[in-house]
Length: 195
Image (cartoon, rainbow, N blue to C red; front, side, top):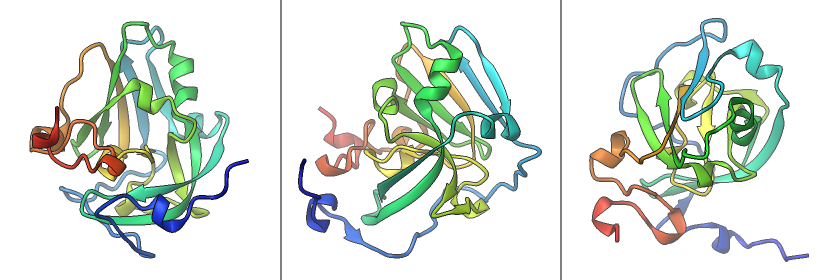
């Protein structure tokens, strides 16, 4: 069994640890109640879905603890999330073999692109709870994507759509100069760093 990683090993280069959970987003905070909420899954799938919040909660739920790294140089460790594994949703929709990428869409118009392979990891989920409490509006409630191995802009708040795609398209921040992948330990912050 591997020894637990030290705080230094868990903190990417250029990051500072914080015990706070800063709030950053480009738009006003949308107010979506759980009764109004709907998640649409579409694109390169055999069975497109539109799920209410109650239907999501009825799916097999999981708890995961992971670290969270923001491109603005802060990291918050040991976040306890509850929700549904992304791969559970992918399995229910029957992802086509042609799908290689996903665009996550949000209620505020935000969108971000992620390779499908990255989303199928065991620690990626759509979450409705953080540290035992429902996600607040400012932190992306009622539902956000959580992709721990990528910078936090890939963990879209106010999630309302998952679009499976054959070809990659750059997302909101990626179109504005952020790195297309965004891996924290490689410090993939900006598009000029792309090979």
